[in-house]
Image 1 (cartoon, helix red, strand yellow):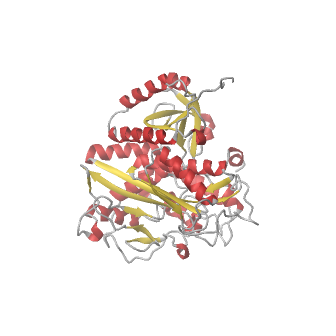
Image 2 (cartoon, rainbow, N blue to C red):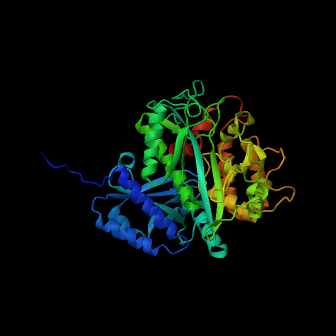
Image 3 (cartoon, rainbow, N blue to C red):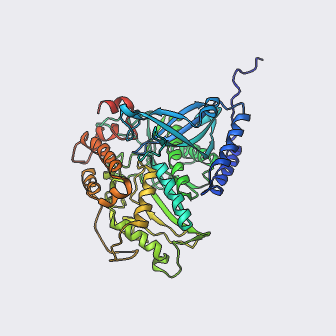
Length: 479
């Protein structure tokens, strides 16, 4: 029998899990230190491993869409200090007249990839975006988040931990979002609800395959299950340092979409793809450690949180409307903020009320945290963590309450109000930068202007196909 022409690297899921957990440990152990050792470690590996054909390099645009390109392995090793790309093709970065940008590889973010999801012979690295004069680009919030995390660690010895509970909905058909029709809407794969799924039905098969891939990527899974809405899913995994948590959000959604595609389905992360059932969120959990101790926790403190934890909540509530557009970045997201469907639209904190913007889970010292429930699954995860941290640690306090509060103010009803709140916030200009804030608002306004102003009781085609995670280059050019 003839030998196969191709001999690219394929690794079993069990071995992938070991490799990627070891890589994550190296990354955590190296936090706050230069990346030189990890760069040497992985470049040596790439030189020796002849079965790798390409390195997938991932980065994120201003709105949060994950972008990828593949570099031939040998070319990447030769040119890793000068990887350029056309920034004018990525929303929120540069104009055509000044389009050349650079990708700076984060060697600590190395992943071995499941070959049935990504193809054989590939590994992945995340990258940060730099300008042509070798400065971090202000629209790249991965770079900005990592810089801020390292500053906090250097100045205060703070280690920011995060975890995201990401919901999505599985619907019939390939490219169901691009082919969306108002008359028929999305067709659900399953009519079951919370925890309800037969062992081998299509929703369960999708969840199982996605969880297996996440586990292989070193996510350290904890549980996975159907959610409250029919055809809705959520896969939970271990918390980690906030930049790792943000990378995992991008990989979580990418893998889910690809698994669904393989199965002839679509995994959608629209916040509210179907009216009349619960929408999807991305509950964002945050805590801060110092010298190995969770400093958000204080036994017998207000709701067992320290003053730092309570003040953090207070500042978030005070700036809730101003940062709502960052946490809920699409026209469709404001359908989700409906109190009739357990939506977290009330600007208050609570240990039990799931319609509160911030929940304080019952916890021990190890697991004490705050849970920001109003984050949509289509938000830029790096921008979300960066904004929550800057607001929670540096913003003004109201000094009217701590932790649990009886306030009943609510978040903006639509994207237009959210744009107004962000526009007039001087503090958000301070933390985002005026130019970046205006770029972001302009992108959100452009999307809003292509949709009917009133949401109504029916999901519109425009709010789906012009969504920032769905729109392709052709549609974007038609804007």
